[in-house]
Image 1 (spheres, rainbow, N blue to C red):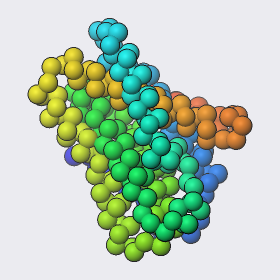
Image 2 (tube, rainbow, N blue to C red):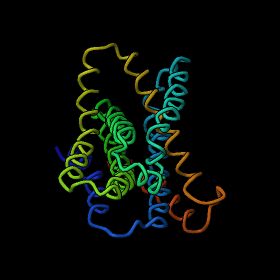
Image 3 (spheres, helix red, strand yellow):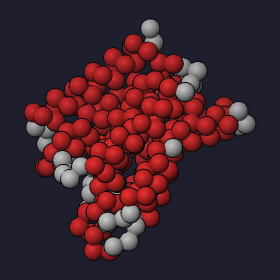
Image 4 (cartoon, rainbow, N blue to C red):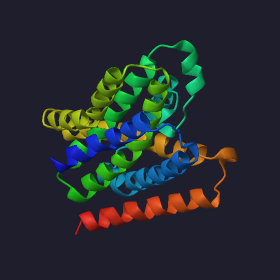
Length: 240
């Protein structure tokens, strides 16, 4: 119950911050993204990959690659919002709800919840990933709602979209538990490998695109180091 609540709270916090704020906070958003991206990458490398590759299978590597490339395709519609890209003025000219952004981000959030359903038997891995998704969803939801708010949509519409989005990750958790009980374990490992590929693309892109000239200024470097240390610390504490 607490896990589902944390998954819901991430998007709600980010969305409500955008809803009630009159500023965009681009610099702070980039630093938080670097922190969240480093955390997500650390969890993927130290928790998810060892979990899936306990038994080596070359096909799993192909599914990791497929997930990586699928995320590239998905960002044609999300426009990189999960990385903090806004493009606000582009959408203000259109004056319509960018459904491609909402649908692709919702699907992305849904897939983020899939590994959690598989890892609930491993308290250490599940909790570390839940925290990572919570951190990642705050800036993603903030950016999405900032764009929607700029379109001058009715408050009721904004809240409805935010609530739907907030429940996508928990829906992924429930779906993965159902799927895991009805398909062979090896097939579920392939699905997990696919999700790992999407996580690798998201986290690495955040790290190398969240600052100009792909550099690592002091603020970003500190955010990355803190993200890595937190991921290791959360995993250790959850395991004990």
